[in-house]
Image (cartoon, rainbow, N blue to C red):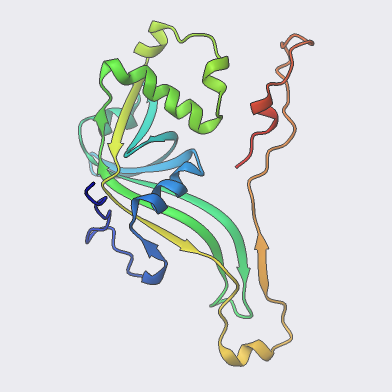
Length: 217
């Protein structure tokens, strides 16, 4: 089996704090799999745009979808270069100086061009996105209607050129500052789900599915 090529290119090489950079596919995939919200950056008619949207990953593809009349997806479908970013904020790093205060995070930057998902894989790609958000939800939904499929644009972006950047651990202060009587450390941050709130029109005897009750990231 041939080795998986590195995702590192001159454009994705981490130059600020290079020791935090990683270019292997498994690291990038793990960060992508931990989330479902990305930001799409692109230029249309000379104007930069950054648009948040849901995504799903399957093997070496990222899927995004939206309205068939979406300006964003329409521009991307024409093949304009796109930059996809995903970030997880894991903690506030409070140093003894503002200069060394930071954040713990996991992030991915991916560069490429989008392609329209073939018609025979379109519904499958929509399922991948749904399952990225909530595992098992697709099977609970009513079957998707053809008019809903036609009203949805689905694009795929190959994972070929990317970098991950990760910071973990405590503050890194200047050595003399460790003697200062200033609290320093990390405030951990996590994404926590609250108690599910039923639709007001839901039948009172409708149980909450197990995957809804146990949702977490």
